[in-house]
Amino acid sequence: MGFRLKFKVLVSDPLAEEGIEILRETCDVDVRTDLTEEQLIDVIKDYDAILVRSGTEVTAAVIEAGANLKFIGRAGAGVDNIDTEAATRRGIPVANAPSGNTMAATEHTIAMMLSMARNIPQATASLKKKEWKRSKFMGVELNEKTLGIMGLGRIGREIAKRVIAMDMKVVGYDPFITKENAAQMGVELMDADELVKVADFITVHTPLTPETKHLINAARIATMKDGVRLINCARGGIIDEKAMYDGLVSGKIAGAALDVFENEPPFESPLLTLDNVIVTPHLGASTVEAQKNVAVSVAKQCLAVFAGEPAKYAVNVPMVPPDQQELMEPYAVLGEKMGRLLVQLVEGRMEAVEVIYGGDLSKNRFTRYITRSALKGLLDPILREPVNFVNAEYVTRERGIRVAETVTEAAQGFKNLITLRVKTDTMEETVSGTVFSKDRIRITSIGGYTMDMVPEGCVIISRHLDKPGVIGRASTILGEAQINIAGMQVGRVKRGEEAIMVLNVDAEVPQAVMEEIRTKVGIFSAKFAKL
Ligand SMILES: NC(=O)C1=CN([C@@H]2O[C@H](COP(=O)(O)OP(=O)(O)OC[C@H]3O[C@@H](n4cnc5c(N)ncnc54)[C@H](O)[C@@H]3O)[C@@H](O)[C@H]2O)C=CC1
Ligand SMILES: O=C(O)C(=O)COP(=O)(O)O
View 1 (spheres, rainbow, N blue to C red):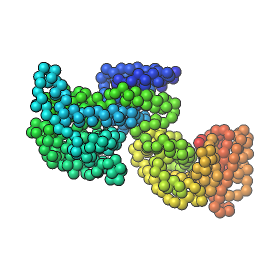
View 2 (cartoon, protein in one colour):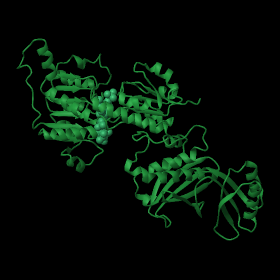
View 3 (cartoon, rainbow, N blue to C red):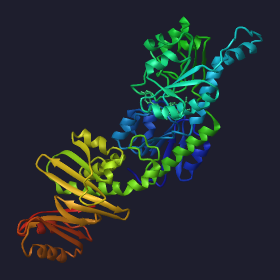
View 4 (tube, rainbow, N blue to C red):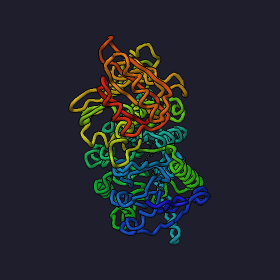
């Protein structure tokens, strides 16, 4: 990897100038919106980041070819065109701009619903052909009709708010929200089968996932009200297009308003031949305001990642809300240090990792964030491939190492306590630590011996027989090697038996010096670690 003065960013879909300008201040930006997948695979190795909208498929092959990729940004909400698993494997953060186009998509959905109800696109086309067909384009009202919203996320709930003001009744389906939460929005929550039976209009606002693919299928269409109207401004494939086509032809479905399609552009789709279908070419997010929002958001996140900071809306790392990030950071630092320390202390093949959260942390909902940092600390020093916060969990599990998180109220008298336990095929070892404050992070025990150790810089950890002279000899050897001891802790369970010594030293200790310490009488093991 050569050293470059400037990061190179590829923008492979149309992105608002406001975002590109932010990037150009410090990066080389190429806007190339005409690349085929083969061409993309060919050029991607030259770039540190790629920014896309829905037009570029960032496949596993693209990601594998992107040897220098450090960031994949989606200027919009849906990341179904990005192989996030492949990115996670490679440790590349993928981030989107989840709320920047919410209002644009909300308003477009409502525009489509009204246009469909009043046949506006068809009537426009007819009048432009100099026809005056008033009875042909008889419409229906939304007033007092029932709208079924499938997916009550950002867009779904904004739609609910607006159509309630238009005196529609709203029913919703979303397995990830509670009835109470829905009720607060004025939405009656029900299951999908029930919703499709009672709604006059149905609109989908879920991501496209294996669970939501064909959420509306032939079986559900069969149970819908005769003359139901469907809207899809989320993702092609949430509604089964073949089943929808059949319903539109038979008259079961009175109309459909579609912004998205299973294949885009949908030039071969028979849906385009039907008069009761109105369409737009994936325009949901296409407002001046939304495009500025999403472009600026991904551009800023891209620069943050280049600066070594996390992307605010990374989709392949555990979510910590912005107001919790400062609070969680010291725990993440402690977790990583504990991992780094522990990996130097164990021998054999790692089989299982357990992270135990005690005290206040037992009630913390974001411990996965700390666990990832601990796994990064454990694996980064021993694996040749880079391990980072993004791929740490993936890499651990891929190696067949079991990972478990447990909680306990007990915290050995501390307010919070993290205990990291590693089991290898030959041994088990444990390290505990606590955060007193942002600047006071401590290791509180190693292998059951109580400590008060600052997890920073260079340390030597040795096990020896508790007898006079051992500590003195180790200090002499270090002194002769011109290595200053900044701090020392010793611990033992019983007088005269095994004891532990932790030395904070001011410099890296050469192998030969470590060997000398190891061979001294009474020292069972001595390990050097850099934290
Ligand atoms: N046409 C366009 O140009 C645009 C399309 N979109 C698409 O709209 C959709 C919704 O976007 P947002 O509201 O921003 O996303 P969001 O993530 O805020 O909301 C999605 C909702 O779907 C729910 N959900 C997930 N799995 C579900 C399932 N199996 N069944 C029912 N509900 C499920 C989630 O709980 C969540 O409440 C996405 O597919 C997005 O890509 C977004 C913006 C513009
Ligand atoms: O944000 C989304 O999910 C969208 O579908 C918008 O797509 P676009 O950025 O307009 O290609």
